[in-house]
Length: 278
Image (tube, rainbow, N blue to C red; front, side, top):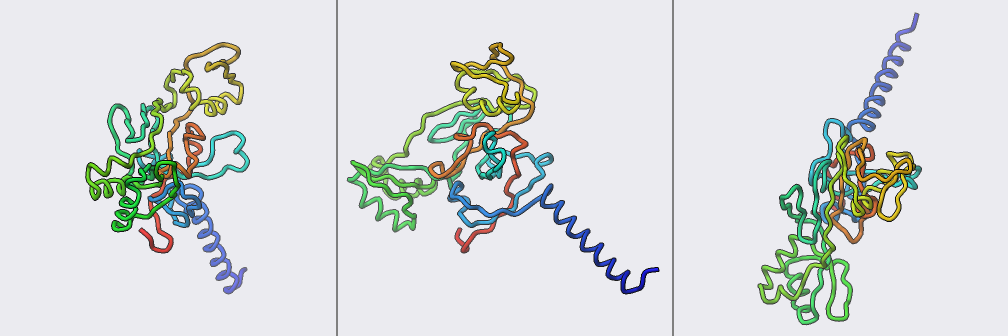
């Protein structure tokens, strides 16, 4: 027979173990907090900010424009599994066109996040007026770099709008957004035949190598499986195209390729800022 004191201690021990088990299960399968350690999502998220991540991706898969935490899909990163944070742009089955101005998804235009950072060139003639106007509007000067005929700096989409409104049409023509080469791709969806060409193979290379156990062979922009050229591939899981708001300081799908669903940790559902900045 156990004494009264022993029963009380045993009861407390069981309660403690249950509580620890609930916390552990919650962190593994439901939600967990993380600290942002890179400027990849400036200015939506700052270095040092905290986020609460919903890890139940089976019930709540990432949706367009969600901020997503994921691990690298590159095979050489399989041991370290570094974490990255980006915004969900393309979902399984989407046709995505990326340009400097916006995203075009399944034939519809979607503007970039107003907090997304872009690089702009400002001519020497406008430099002083531009910087003075930015100061009046309390717009921070980020990544300022001198150029032979002007300067470059980083602005959010909303800050660009504010400056163009303040400068007027004539002066605003003297600062331009740095252009990127537009590209288009279809995001693979589980079980759907995916047509391959030289462009799509670049984005899908790591995914195909992973799904074939490294047996795929790429040569002259073509895919060979079991020694035979193939122009279609059936993927075994869904994939996403994830891009960061701060393209100058981020590693995302541009570098890592397609992100498989089983490499997604979860989506941010809550955030709290360091030093109470906006």
